[in-house]
Length: 277
Image 1 (cartoon, rainbow, N blue to C red):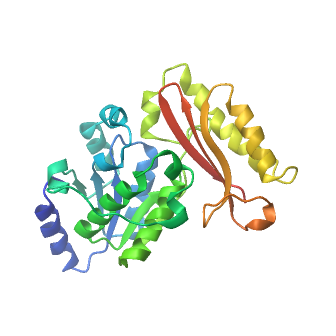
Image 2 (cartoon, rainbow, N blue to C red; image 1 turned 90 degrees about the vertical axis):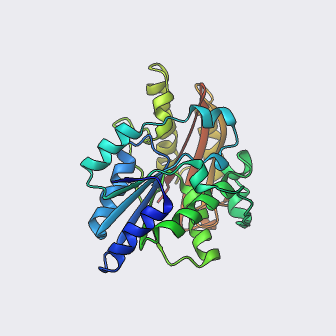
Image 3 (cartoon, rainbow, N blue to C red; image 1 turned 120 degrees about the horizontal axis):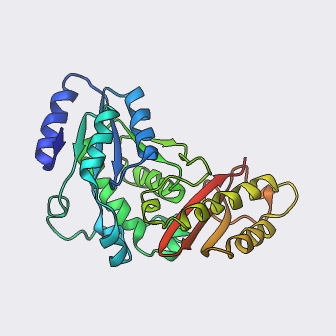
């Protein structure tokens, strides 16, 4: 089932909640890949009803050109979701989601000032506004997010805490291609030449993980940036505390180190991360 209207989605879900059916929710922007499907599969295992939203959220894009180029593939997405036994697709218009201008602002403190937040001002506020709205519409018991968007996951957990939303946030592992490239809708925009080069990001992350005992966090950040400089224009490569997302100066600063990276390959901006446990 594909619903475009909020009232229709809520009426259907209300009929399921009356029957004490549990609801799992996977918010997406479409252009689905196996990473998204793995979230649907995780939701299917632990919930009676699985809802997937497909909405390219305009207020989280800093670059209008990026919004324009974002792939929209509803027909293909619908087939994938049907095969994954998704029960309901919510595919609203911008007008349905934002009948009035979205003016809500959130303060996520230091979580939104580093890495993605530093390079994409306002991005996480746009994410938070749409996720809060979707949570309110769906009223799910559990929501599923991939760890590839590691900082986004931290921000959404903070949103749930700030707004006291009664939902469980379930983090799922990053799905990767055979060569290690993190699955992403943006990968579709890589040229045939760029596609194998893109896997170098995972090589850099893996090197850092394997060399943790030999070097300090700063030394490994520098080595990773030098390695990536051959093919990429890196925005950041940072080793952070996985809870606060703040840089660490020593391995003793955290029991949960995570390496996070954002880099441009041609016209495509790629992000990834790896837990260094």
